[in-house]
Length: 373
Image (cartoon, rainbow, N blue to C red; front, top):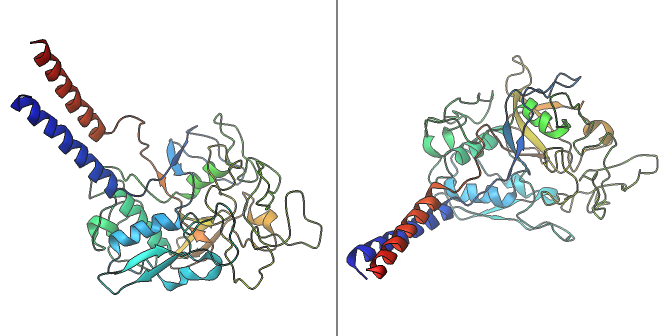
């Protein structure tokens, strides 16, 4: 083998190694659903119109994904991205060991009886403030860097937080100062979330479902049903439960003392999605939104979705007419993170893969020419 071919072969191996390092450094992958039909009509509620195509996470951010985030940026947890509250039994999520500067975070196993498909890491992360959700979005928008909680990791990106942990939320940035481009990950606005949940799709005047399960009928809560209208929620009524529904919680149904896990794995109801293929927009966990309640209600933001503990009136709690505001510093056991994006990636080979392919072709061409000679 000539020196030129040896050099080019070494370059291929170096490129492959570089790509593997890059991929290993980006441990969190979010599967995005494309929400099309830009310029759709708003619902009778006044919500749901979005004039552009965007993406939204098919599932909530999971406990495992949030652990990856914590282990990258919270060896010293400057802005309280973790609290011991996340280990409350019904939503037990993340344990922390070590001391400041060397903290390590791991998913906490579900408390109580186990259920097939539910693991420590695949449940939605909850008990996080709006500011923690924004810091996670910044970290994703910045390419999942490792290091302390500074401008290049968590404090700037989609949102210019700069140490804020309470008070009014921060507006979405048009440009990520760390990349000079539009932020790749954001917290959805109320209209973005609403459209992805209830819009029927297919045209700009398709109309809206009453529930985020492509149905006008309240979903059932029975985990054993593999149907197209099922969700994780608490049901209670003096009347007999409807089809595919039982009294109490979806799992550990009679645990009214909150001593067992009540979260299901994200996307477990495989036959139940919105028209855009998004899971659990009714049930399991609410989602932080980017829309403040009112200029006079400083520090209060809307959440939507319906939850595992949705209470005595799931007919209302899950319907598209239901919304409520909560304090941005609230650590709700039923509020999670679902990210969106304005910049959808085109499904094509990555730059890294293309570079390796080009180098490999170069080696092969040189080898063929040398062989013919």
